[in-house]
Length: 231
View 1: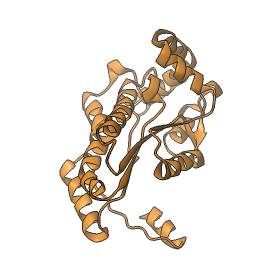
View 2: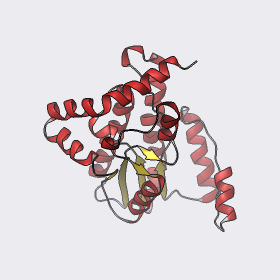
View 3: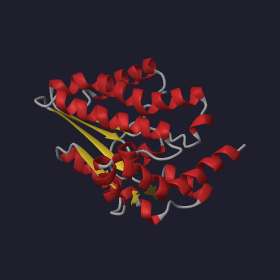
View 4: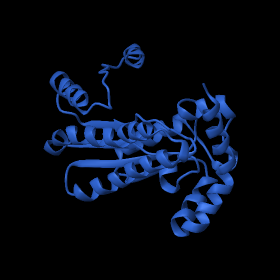
């Protein structure tokens, strides 16, 4: 509602449609209302998500299910619900993944797995609908400064090491805008230190895992320990 108000104050038009993305029936009802009031859906940006960083052997089993439901099932369900509109005309689906989905992080098995699933689904959909008037793009940010998850991390254990790279809200917004205008399969949004690590992880997984663990292990362990000690 606040964001819709900001858009209206800037001269745009926006409506908020709250729903529970963990409930496929409620999600379908929300899409039905949008279509009924605004017409066919031409753009979908899958952005909701959670990051349950913690030692995996201590992970709450129900929490694993909730993370998968919100990070993976919800965007798949939303995409499925709006795709008929896009196939009948044209459309764009942009899904926010993460660099964690490209190579994984220690203490982030659940989060990394869900974001890898988003990337894989995007690739599959691009292949399946290659000749259709709908485009699919996965945007993978690194640690985002200015808002969102990493701002919470900073309050808990400080900023991520510079060697792990980072980006800004403005850069992510710019990447999403570009994805809406151009047919880009995947976009990585992070500073240069992380890009060679991603390439190494893809070419030489063993070395990639060792390097990632060395660079990210201490920071991610501190974050997991902070979550463990939180009331």
